[in-house]
Image 1 (cartoon, rainbow, N blue to C red):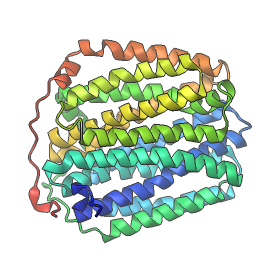
Image 2 (cartoon, rainbow, N blue to C red):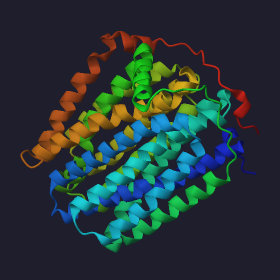
Image 3 (cartoon, rainbow, N blue to C red):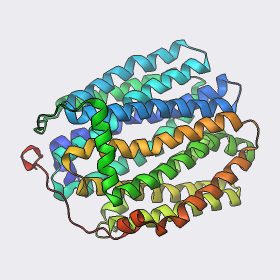
Length: 415
């Protein structure tokens, strides 16, 4: 008989896991399809792709800033329900517009509430899962996002190409949100008790940043995420034109490539909770970080669609090993009152430089060849990453111990 992984036997975590998997699947499907829609409505203008990515990430940043605070101040279950409900009318609005600018705006609004959803959900996981099983829970969520990366872009690209429009994508997106809402409503959640706090919204954000600065390993993780975000801000919007213009691939081939990235990520989440579970979190993060610029260089030098598929699979494996262990660090080391803000900072550290990369790409996208931009980005990636071990924060991350913070066990789930 098939047995669920132990952590999924926690009833409330299982419901939260399914809710996250389904509702976020809709976001990944629609995000890919909307990028293709913008590309089509703008007559294949690469600058619009950069603008779309920048707007998406700008709104995601604002959502993260809000979510990191309200996820600690208010009932997290209610926050998750609200952010799912509000995204539904936005996706239906896309059916009635034909302007790439309006599509970009709608995509940004979806990102706003997605940004509020993510840190709140991740903090809620730490509320309901016993500390001894948090690494397994993080690995499963890492695997879930890998599945989203695998299935979402493939479905989005395939459905948009096959149906020649966005209607079917919107219908699927709507269905996934409804399923997510159902599972969130059905879980039992008792919010943790908070100390009375009269801090203002901005003060809470500032205090979260101050806390991160005092923790050298966390500062190292955030610095690394900033570099990754900047690189992907240039790279991600250019994958589609690079594959179609340089490699001669189709839009559906593009979806397959992203799907293989997600498949690699699925194995990355599994590896983090099995063969790598007893290894140092810091050493795993740093090793994965150093592999990524090498993979980008090999990808560009190969200039082959077949090689792209293999490299994207390996890249997904490495990225999700790193991401899962970043979550493990926060779950094991960060004080409870800073959890949501720390998860929000991880998201912010990625998306803010992503915005910068997207904005720059908007201005230079049509002035240089796609491969020229990617080669410059790759060189910058290597230059920014390889000297990092000389810094004290990276040394602190490399040498972290296995001690964990204490959590309130009275609100945790049980089998």
